[in-house]
Length: 285
Image 1 (cartoon, helix red, strand yellow):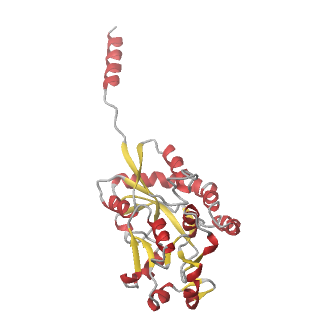
Image 2: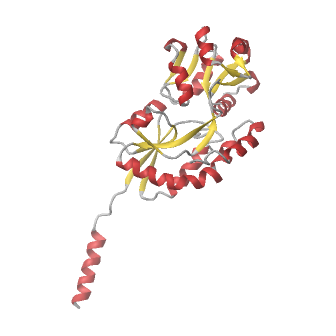
Image 3: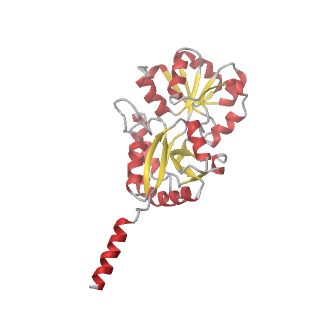
């Protein structure tokens, strides 16, 4: 009888004990096709839109909240050690590595370049070799303006080129729909060049009702063909623990799932080559 009373008492204590609250992990996302798409017929069909549920499902130790931010706000949140936040679409840079803890690479993507309207193509001709543009030479020798997204990294190689140029050659945009707004400015003739990623700009041009044959994309001389995305979390004990778990999950999805999700957004003639190249992206990682 006494044993039964002890057992009942223990069960009562367990039943009334407070449940340990899970830490809330903030996933910082922005409207960044083809990775995250917030509106339209392709809503939720981006690469990261489909990657995030795979990670969240296998990280039940956290309460997950997806937060929409622009690039500048996302960087501010990652810099604040009080935030437990992760960004699933970050490029590694030395500057970010001071306050972000990065996962292993998750996805290889086509590097950025310059988009110009067909009527402005002749302005680039003296600075092209094999369709790649000498960006530093172009912006140092002409009065052309280059539209860029504020606080966005375009890869360490491209960022190094941009740092060598005077601020007067840039038109910076800070908004949530920064790249789309820059393309609209280009259509209106307010700037001639937009820096970005062709799959993203190709999608946005079509969303705006533009014709792709009225645009030209040029890779940048001296820049690798591919660059790599990471998940980046706050550099705190919580952030480092989350990255340690993410690193265990990434290898399975980056080989079998993510390349095909990304390839569908490429120009059709590039898809087969990309999928073949992607098999070797992570041989040393």
